Structure formats: C-alpha cells, structure tokens
Amino acid sequence: MKQLSTARKFKMITNKDIFKASKELEKTMKDDESNDTTENVEFVQYGLYLAFYNPDLTKAKQEFSDFMKTGEFDTGEETIKSLMDKFKATFG
Image 1 (cartoon, rainbow, N blue to C red):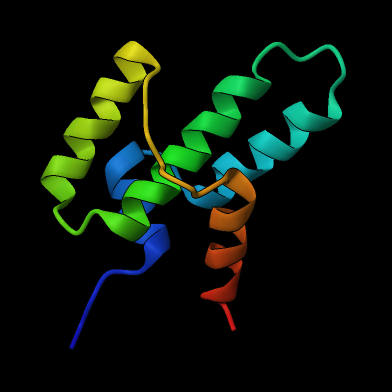
Image 2: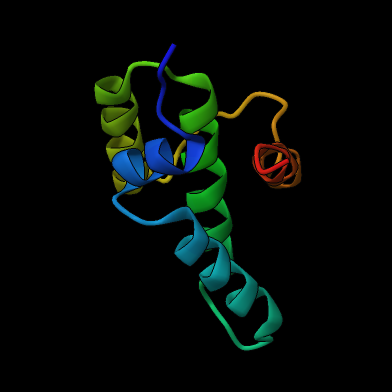
C-alpha cells in the first residue's frame, strides 16, 4: 500500500520542511541568547505528533493552524525526544 512519508506529512501539515525545522531547532538550542527555543520545540513536537498520529491531513492542518494561533496543543505522553527518535528510526 502506498503512503506518504512522515517528512512529507510534516511538510503538508506545517508548510515547513522537517529537516529545515530541525536545523533551526538545533541552532536556537545552541544560541544562549535565542528567545525562540520554546516556539521551535513546540513547532517540531506538534508537527511530528500530527504527522505520526493524525491520518486525516486536512484535520491535522487545521489542528496545527489552531495551535499556531493559540499556542495550545496535546501530544499525550509523546515528548520532542520520543518523536524525534521515532522519526530518525524511519530512516533505518
């Protein structure tokens, strides 16, 4: 059965490439004076969560849009680390 990759789903949901978002996250985490770390962590965390667990891309895009407006999201027990580890595992 054909299906979209997690990276493609992430891009369709967030309108940003996962690899670019990950690089931005790494950069802000290394910068002691960065004021965007929380936003970048949440962006990647919720985007990956939706890419993995919400099969309805239209609904996922709407949920992500709502998150961008309110800053509120729920990933259950999934942390940024667990989601990134799961994403890295998709590459072998």
